[in-house]
Length: 322
Image 1 (tube, rainbow, N blue to C red):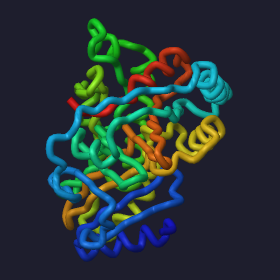
Image 2: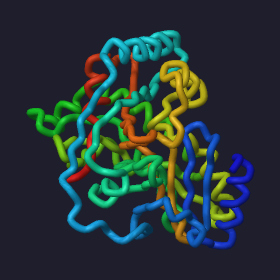
Image 3: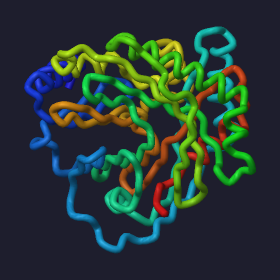
């Protein structure tokens, strides 16, 4: 779908209170949406109380994942390009991501059933996402966003205290909260930060992680469902995986990463006829033939240190199987 076609379809289905599933790439070049009874058989999803896919695979195997990350020197080249543009004042925060070849002993379908995550989507033989991050939720005419910024190995001594007191992490989080507040103000009124920098633990097959998030909310109009498609495209791409200012930073990201992200860091979501839940597509494995690649990254600010950011991107390469 083109952006106008996507907006028109979702606006119509919103008016009809017709349940639908949507899938949008980071570049807004490949937008997909289906009424629930028309979703292709090779797309499996688990989001809130809604799930669809084949029967559960019994006795899933123990999952092993081996990482083959890019060299630090290659990462540093991308990092320094971002930092230079930040020094020039073109960006305050930019999300830099890498593609890591991995070895897996399971198919994407097996991982879909074995993994435990708030949001899961598998497009068979294409990609799998098991995301902990909400894009937006809409409940009873209120819109919520929960941007994630700040990750640390939970086994580190005083890990929560360290990440919450880190000046770089605080600066990054304040920037993204301000960006999301501004984004939501384009579609809602009475924007408030209900919770600022709360910590959640994410369990993985390797080491557990602490993730820092905030909760931002606003009031929608009574007839918001009539313009659901327009609402979504107004908010895209997700601020937490692009940066600030969003338009300029998105171009800087393209210059540094030198390839499209595709559906990685895009958004998928489900509308049940009244409420909506959606996820940012992070924690992402893509398949090319028999090869698997894991996409990961983190936010870069003026205070970022290349070695720490490189390690954070590698630490985020995991499967939530335990």
